[in-house]
Length: 259
Image (cartoon, rainbow, N blue to C red; front, side, top):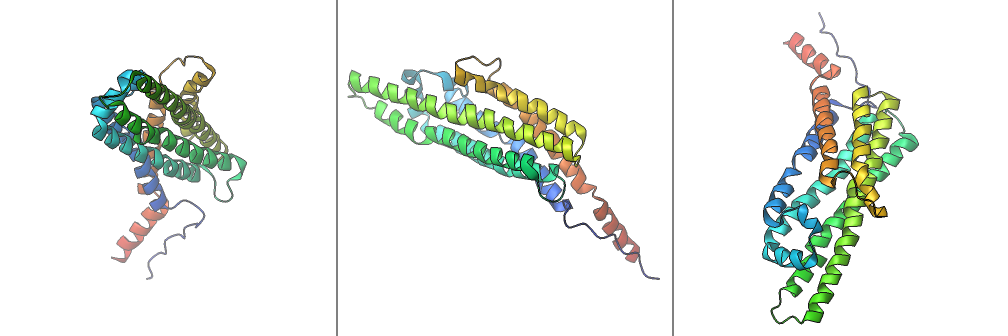
């Protein structure tokens, strides 16, 4: 007697492998943020040091330059990974076929958020590092010292607005809200994933009001905590689906029957 043939898999639907990859990436995105936080926190009291005056920050930056490069290098890797996280989440949130306007908005926001984060981080690895070296010269005149402090203040304000306000907050929030609406519309993922994503998107958007001279009710670190928990929840969901795909169970049953 011929063994039963496993049901064919729709090529348009996400595969088991895609779910497993997405689960791993999202869990990695949620966890690796602690690496740069630990390095930078121990070296320069990050994130409190983001608000330090140039006269305090520049000597500290020069003294801990090696640790700063390591920490912000790790943070840059975490930020670049966000694009992969954003694309995979949107792919699994949307029904098979063209994504439509909402999906394209989410993908575009993920790309812009990644670029803005990278620009914000690079300020510490380039401009601020060069200013810290110049500031460390023992024969520096008071006028030159004042000029360097002014440049550092400007670079920090400019880079912070792009990296933190736009990258970490505004465009990350647009991505999270768009992806969550996609989840609720296409129903490829549980409803709770869309509802919690909307809450995370609203929370992470709060620091944007700082661009208008208004103090946000929470720090950017606290506002992104909700997003990290959402990454963990989605990562667990994707891994569970990858390990329990119907076609995977059917194939295993088919092999067992033949044996």
